[in-house]
Image 1 (cartoon, rainbow, N blue to C red):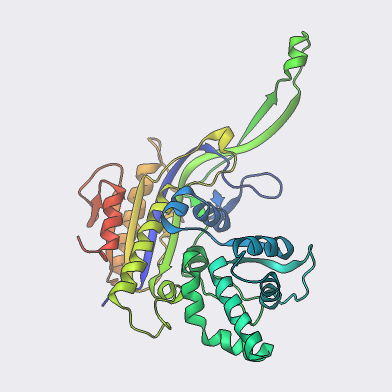
Image 2: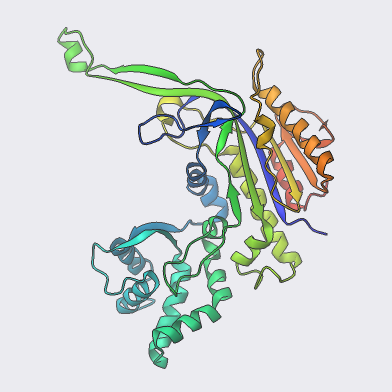
Length: 373
């Protein structure tokens, strides 16, 4: 029987950096296993994934995430110019947002993702409702009846299918996200350093005066980060309109499409890094190790690092060994029936019973083949 969940476990060693900051301009941290760890938030990582060049080249345009309804109205009017009258676009936006009679500075209650192709389908429904003389209640029922078609129209904006969406009105469809992404943490205890830096004022220096034009400090650190994400393949197929419901049986084509997206997700998780302070630190590091499993449920291996990794000869290899050892123990302890594969830069044919690929594209190919070698 096909497995419904893809679990991604990725280890990346980052050189000195400050990839995610809090409201005090300090590195985000977490206490795990009683020790401080550097953290990269789930939100930061997900935004980095969907705004990356790889995402745009391979998975299409991302949605428009905004609460600025006035600006959104202008953007949608421009994108759909000539297809629908401005009045239909504005009426549709008002009905979908729950804010009819939009002013130029109108704001939604929360930031929401908007799909231009889905919105165009809604414009069709609103336009037809005007012709048929339907009131709002009947229009909402019509929209509900067209749920699968609306999801198919939204397929160009895959990030909504992956991350989900909360409905803001009766005309906007709620989407349960298919991809769960954990906060990344270091596999070991990590103490931050402080960079005390100055900016030299050239004109002051040329005049022979001593002193900096600017003084400041920046917190930073380095470490091996554990990234975990889980993809619900059935939910993804439903969100893309490939299946009518979670109870429907997968088709060969629908599962193949979901596995292709899973392979792209693996590539993103292994290669994309948040861009915070990268002009100062350039910590553009790719994954050193990735373990992927096709399983019956989401399974995080974060507890492999509840006891922080320690080592004098580097922390990366001990982190890999600890992760694989914990995966083996979880596998044996719960009698898990998984298909698993791995990628490692330190080329080995197998580690702890895992077939290890020497190149990431080979692991992506394995995943597209539903875990078959």
